Amino acid sequence: MIDALISLIQDIISPLQWSLNWINILEIAFIAAILLIFYQKFIKNTQSEKLVKGLFFLVFAWIFSEILILIDLRILGVFLKSLVTLISLSLIVIFQPELRRLLGYLGQPGFIRKALFSSNSNSMGDNNEVDVIKEIIEAVKYMTKTKTGALIVFQKEMSAGIYSDVGTKIDAIISTELILTVFHPNTPLHDGAMVIENNRIHSAGVLLPLTEDPKLSWKYGTRHRAAIGMSEVSDAACLVVSEETGDVSITMDGILKKYEDLMTLKSDLESILGIKPKEDNQEKHKNIFDILRGINK
Image (cartoon, rainbow, N blue to C red; front, side):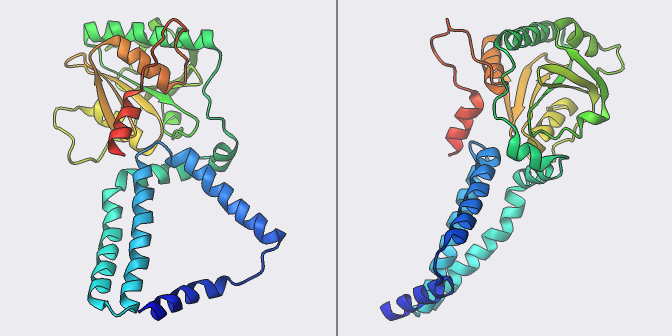
């Protein structure tokens, strides 16, 4: 049994018996850097992190099944190997939103440039950022009272910008009055989404992809389904104001969170947009999506 295990290890290592030189070291460093960048940009602190951990588990389970077969425990080995194969095929269905999101990233124009050279910081000046939050909160406060439906997309560096190109380009400074004007029921753009990028209103009247999640409750209308769908295929965060109830929600990574008070909404918007809270706030508010990710882990 031990001889068979040693023989398996030798068979695995034998093709790798080559002398290391500076070219090989550079190749290993290049591969490691690519994997690290990919992990930092697309996997870390997201739901896809669970997928990566699951893949590593399946690889180790497959290796273990091969060892069981070599040491004459064929029934256990074949059973474990078949189970790994079945789970691998089912991953396509289970992690469909993550796969759709990854394909959405890869299909963006300028994907390589954004992935390698984009900055993770969304900072654009503290004074302007605080004004942005204030203008959005004031608009949301009015729309919740009047039950005015709204859908606002906060587009980040790697968001699927192709959707915002379909709407009407505005390119204007964010203001409460402009947001309320766009989402007024009698305006042509009120049914679509408003896209905010780089602390400016990029476009309005944008049509977003609807989620295909069959488990989503029937009570959610088109705005909520569009917000969830956009967050599934991109790293954008979407703010929704319900036209029926006036409730405020935010979707991110396919997760929908309903807000009961504007202070919590303000804190989460600061976290999502990368805006530092004022110094008089001594307690740091934890983003609700970070809490949900922690529970998932």
